[in-house]
Length: 178
Ligand SMILES: N[C@@H](CCC(=O)N[C@@H](CS)C(=O)NCC(=O)O)C(=O)O
Image (cartoon, rainbow, N blue to C red; front, side, top):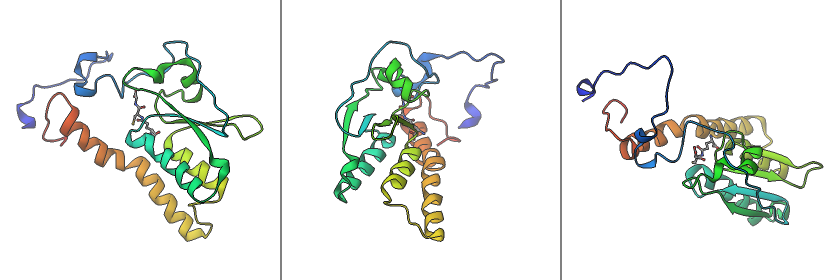
């Protein structure tokens, strides 16, 4: 019961209590930015993907695979594991692509100067526009596709992710949150 929980007054100056993050305390940390010098590998394909198979990570991999299945050879990519449990997202090379230290991160080396991409929704839109695929040109249909794109970025994480977090990962079970 929420009523049984001790009162909590947010402090004026917040301090990160690392021990209070539950089972996944070492991921989804409230910090970003480089904490170590790490150069990222770069392969020979147009796209360089730095990611991990989490729900946010797989979206872009699925999109790239679907583009390849349609015959868009320009969507060939090299994929590198960024192990967020080991803190790979805090390496300097990764942060150069995503200052927010979150996977997935993507580079497009087929543009005149390499284009960096962070935020999975931005990547889906970028790839759809670049290859003219999966985004209708008809005004109404395009708007409907974008409605759902923004829904899955803005609402799905709070419905699904929020539930999953408070049900499975949070160190205390809070009825109100679940
Ligand atoms: N809105 C971002 C969310 C990315 C995100 O939350 N990534 C998580 C894994 S699913 C992450 O990298 N967590 C590592 C950390 O926070 O340290 C997107 O869609 O790209």
